[in-house]
Image (cartoon, rainbow, N blue to C red; front, top):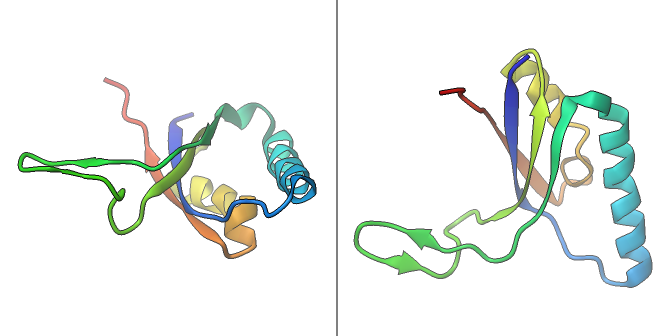
Length: 104
């Protein structure tokens, strides 16, 4: 079964410690529901930099990365269906970009 990178964009920071606990519980419930398909639950990430041949941009580009996970799925279509259950996708605050990890 191939692995897929879920690259998260958007989302929002919790406004209180209580909201942070609620959000974390939603993510953990989603991961628990996926069972052994979760290869690496990943983490949120800080502000990214975009490196090109000419420059380094400090703003992360037009759609900066906010986190990642590695999930096993039978196909990219299955991975996309799994991504629909992601808490920030479900609440409309962010998106998940899905790509198969190619074994070399």
